[in-house]
Image 1 (spheres, rainbow, N blue to C red):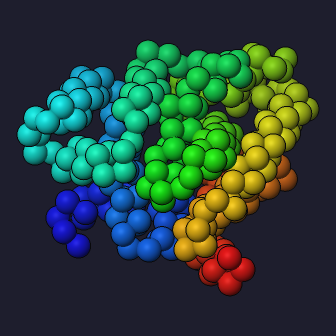
Image 2 (spheres, rainbow, N blue to C red; image 1 turned 45 degrees about the vertical axis):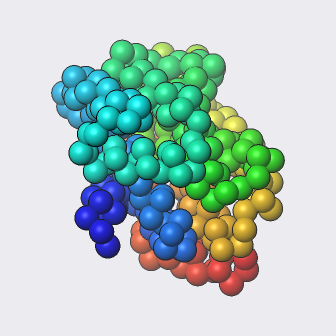
Length: 273
């Protein structure tokens, strides 16, 4: 593997267990491009997720990306690889700017307490990722809406799964305004257990609606690409089912499928693709 690919591979592997292991079912050429995409995404995300946050580092990274896109030599393997991918796959520049906007929101806004606020963040942080993936796989434009919906659904499960982690960072991404809860802090929800269970059930129902809409787009995905996409989707559904059994589990551990479960699901999907 070339040095540039190795940098993206290691960056992606360190940041996304479920999607990384699912992506290994892609053919090598598509897998390479997925690494280029997620290497860029992960590095940008790391700047805003650090404690303390590295706002200056994020803005420098953003500026370097824009200069590289305009043709300037940057000599940053993460940015150079992503810009090359952007040009080869004709990514819309607005998609990348939307992604960077959502990352910047993490620097200036910690509370997304209504559904419109959540969806504004999700568009840049996840729906455009679905669009990038659609371009990488050369899917028809009819698939774009479903690709966006899959990104939205996966991000929403992450929000639910990561409630405790986000609490520690002082963040709220779920529309708590739809409940009588004042926050999703553990003390608050344990003091109002039924309200919390009802709230999580409603959010999981919403996720399943979006996931079902996304799955209608699987028919546009060639069989050789469908396996990793469906495998990732199946693993997020598994995560949702685990949380539905006991919503308070999100305060005890981070629900993630083991590698063996992901690989087995991928093999099963290969047999039924």
